Image (tube, rainbow, N blue to C red; front, top):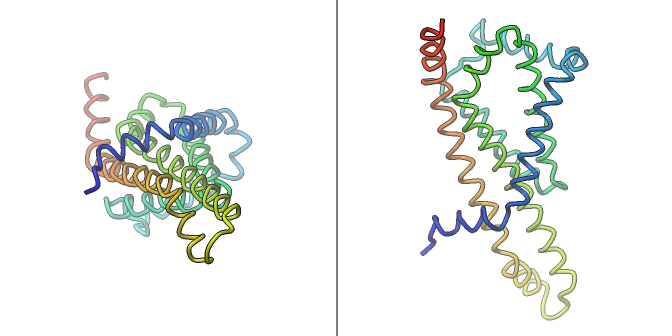
Length: 209
């Protein structure tokens, strides 16, 4: 029987480098998005304005379902696109750029902006970091699988494929474990974003004013 606690611990301990690289990508992209706000304005401001307009007109409703659906789509994209030469890193970087840009645009009231981001952002950023790492690990599985298959010239084609798969199954399993953790964190982030972030922010603003 699969011991999820043990498997998750193993997935994290054996893929620290992938997680650290993902953290660095997010941190650097957040900083660049903030610092380069004047240069990114022409590209990202239309996206922000269009999103705000759709929310105001009701075309986009900020419900748990809509927020979770969008965020979980990003998580799975980062996982799947890890197969394409770690393309998941670009998805994570874009999201980091966007958040950094958003904070810079609203820097006139930095305290309030951070209050509206941090409660759910702790879970959402953690989820994105782990999702990106899962994409890296998935790419590592694919690379090792193809490498093992290329050097295995014994038996039938199906046996060669199977042996290569079994030999590297641990990496595939670890990538899936990381994806599951990222999914759970994104569910928590969605709950916070819809039901808790605004009340927490309003409460802190009320006692600090």
